Structures are given as structure tokens and as C-alpha cells.
Image 1 (cartoon, rainbow, N blue to C red):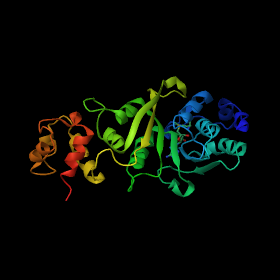
Image 2 (image 1 turned 135 degrees about the vertical axis):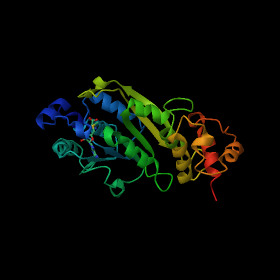
Image 3 (image 1 turned 30 degrees about the horizontal axis):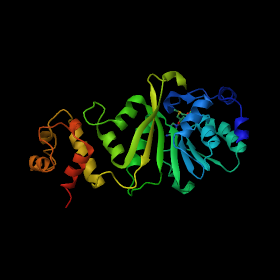
Image 4 (image 1 turned 135 degrees about the horizontal axis):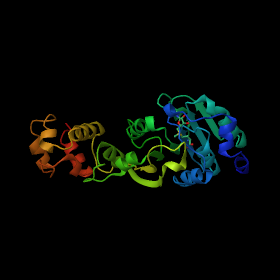
Length: 279
Ligand code: SAM
């Protein structure tokens, strides 16, 4: 571990390898190693775990994950300019860092990982929600990962942990909380990043439940929820009428007033409604 501590400060790494931030790649770097170590501690004890990191950039969080004792880190980075900096980290901890150059949306990391697996990343904003949605909707549950520790724009983080009755509550909250415990673990101001983004950020920590919180078929729940929130201001009896002619009876049967709006309805009730569509 001490060899990681001997690596140069990240500002020097960025200067040496000329890693000027590229907006198109969502590059807002974390250069404070105390902060990256703090983020790396959020998933808990990493010894004996493989960690998947998307977008390591110059490697601040990668260093944190390795210093915190991750068995191995698999880092997927699209920007080839970052590879020499990451290679230096790999040399400081032989056999524990594998870097794949490429687009995380196109690479299947599973062949490179051994369970138990944690995912920890300061995600590029342009692909963050797409990756989260994929990780939350595998064909089988439990998924290949046991926890997700992910940086998002604060507004997205709030949508993940939102409760019924709040403006942020919607499809992302239901998808996240149906099969995970989800909490905001850390909020960061724009100034924590180089260059600073326009908005605040937050790290969300999700742990996979062994089974969904309430029974439902995934595809049916998705369909009901997507339809309900598509017209979130409408009463459910109107927004859902395309799903079934007898929607009002179904809503009544599961105890949801047909005049209710989607944002007032809890996860358990949405799961019950989805179950009425099972054949
Ligand atoms: N982890 C570093 C940190 O905390 O300082 C960098 C975080 S920066 C917000 C996002 C990183 O993701 C950048 O290094 C960027 O090049 C990389 N990236 C952007 N799109 C990507 C993609 N589709 N697949 C893999 N990496 C990507």
C-alpha cells in the first residue's frame, strides 16, 4: 500500500500526462486523495472483493480503492490519454489493477471479475443513469454486484432515494428501491472537482437486497410505473387507462384511489398493481 502513497500528487500527474479535462467525456476530476479515500470507504470492507470502476481518469478514486484494500480493481476508461497515469498505479500494486480502454456501455466486465463484486465510480454524467439502469435491471436477481457506490449530479441522486409525495419521486426511485437499499452517502459542492461542474454532486450507495422488497414481475412493474409517470400530473385512472379497460377496478382492488396521482403512490402499491397483470 505504501507504494501507492509514494505516487505523485494528482495535480502533477495531470500536468505530466497533459490531461486537460474534456467536457464531452464528462471529465470533472477529484484531485483530493483524502476525499477519494473517503468515497472508497463508503462500500465498507473491500478486502476480498473485486471492484469495478468506470471512468478512472487520472486515478484518484482508483488509488483510494486500492489503498482501502480492494483485492482487485477493474477500471474501464474511454480516454486513452489516461492510460499511462493508470499504468503507474498498476506498477505500484502489481496484479491488483486491470485497466480496459473502451466504452463502459459496450464492455461486459463480468469475464474480468470474480465475486464478490462492488461497483464504485465517479461516473461520467452523460452515461451515469444509463449504466445505473442497466445494473439495476439484470435478467436475474441478485445481480453480479453486491453494492453500487456512484457519484451523480445531486438532482439525480435525489431522484434515486426519493420518497412518494416528493417532486423527485418517479421511475428511478422505484427501480432503485424495489431491489436495493439506497441512501445518499456524501454530498459534494462543485469546488470539489477540477474543473468544477455547474451543479453539486452526491454519492449514492445502493446495496442489493437478496430478493425484491415486494413481489412483482420486473417487466410488468416497469410497464405500470413507466406508464403512470409518463403523465405524472394526471389521475391514475386516466394515465393508466391504456393498460387495461378495467384499470379503475384494479386500482380499487389493490387499495389505490383511482383519483390518485403517480407521485403519491408507494412502491408496495405499484408492485400490487403490477401483480394484477400476471397471467
Ligand atoms: N474517476 C475520476 C475522478 O474521480 O477523478 C474521473 C471521473 S470523470 C467524472 C469521468 C471519467 O469517465 C473520465 O475519465 C472520462 O474519460 C470517463 N468516461 C467518459 N465516458 C466513458 C465511457 N463511456 N466509458 C468509460 N469511461 C468513460
